[in-house]
Amino acid sequence: MYNSRIFCIIFTLAVTIMVFHTAEAVETISLSTNSDIYYNGDHVVVFGSVNTIFENMPITIQIYHESNLIGIAQPPVAKDGTFVASFYATGSKWKDEGTYTIRAQYTPTQIAETTFEFFNQVIDLSTSVFPVDIPNSGTFGVGYTIRGGEVKAINMNEERYSLLVETTMNSNGNLILKLPRESFDAQKSDSVDDIFIILISKENNEPENFVQVEYKEIATSSDYRTVLIPLEEGDRWVEVIGTYVIPEFGSIVIIILVVAVSSAIIISKSRFSVRYN
Image (tube, rainbow, N blue to C red):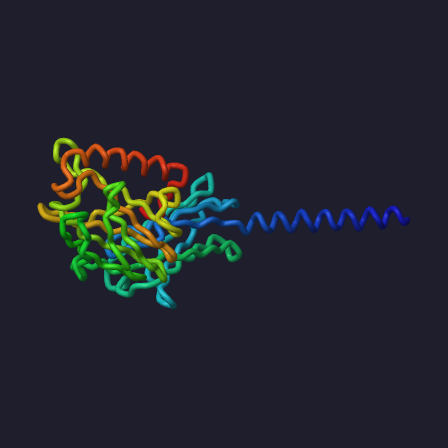
């Protein structure tokens, strides 16, 4: 009799644990976006997966700003449990900047949430101009606009021939730089525009603390190239590496810049971070 009671207790505990883990598994739902920050006109791509699939049952995805419903979609759930939906961030409902919440619901108990930051993109890209010292040769101006923080300094890194921007970021935001081509640019050997290398550090400005991030080139002319760099709270240093710095440095600079760009890629390769798309 005693052994039977012990067996019943153990069996009950085992069943309880199994039920708990099963319920826990049923509740699992993942939810992600292709970026942490979006701007007016962007496509907000929401994707994820569920681990329990119900045939012909879509998942409901809603986007809220505060208590206002901004958008809703009901994409199908694939056989492997994955789903994806896209929202076009434009129109009267997308008028307020700030934190937006994505809510996904598959069953009454399968619910997940995530957030992103939304900004109305500003086309006036020269709110302020920061003078950058040219070693032994005056200055040139870099136009900038920053959201979520403050630009404390913009300097030329003589060793890497790059621009080093010191920031104080109190929240997620972005930095827009209007780069004068005659002083700083990135071009291939055939004079076709090349990409910049953008590195960010939350610590100091030592090379090993930087990681490479993506950026958007939002305006291009014969005189300027304008880049938008998403930033996170706590970001302190932004380094922009090109292939050309003011004529006064001479042709030897291009060789040094190629080495600097290669070095940046090597440094950031093990810590590569695609924060934003």
